[in-house]
Length: 142
Image (cartoon, rainbow, N blue to C red; front, side, top):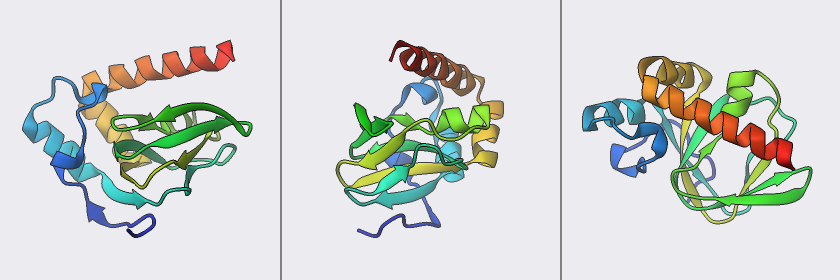
């Protein structure tokens, strides 16, 4: 497995059924998969780092990762999880570090493609906003 392989397109079959894409047809899922780059992440590698500015949004296609805030473990995430949306929408540094617990495949969306996704698919936009609100509340509850 290559660390952070780039330039490969994601096969739509690798894109898990995630709440963001519920209600979209096969052609729409294929278009979304075409926007993403397929990245392989090796166990133990940091996918994102707290405090750094982000330029990508990720959806976990396979594998698991651990989420840390201020070096404290807060959650495990897996297939279908969205990572990094808060930094892109709010234009601020990442609020958590995410480390691969297993080898992973993620769909990586650039800022441009993430914004295109939100603009073109209102359902995905709504789900991202719901996710943001939930994560903000979780952070306030900590």
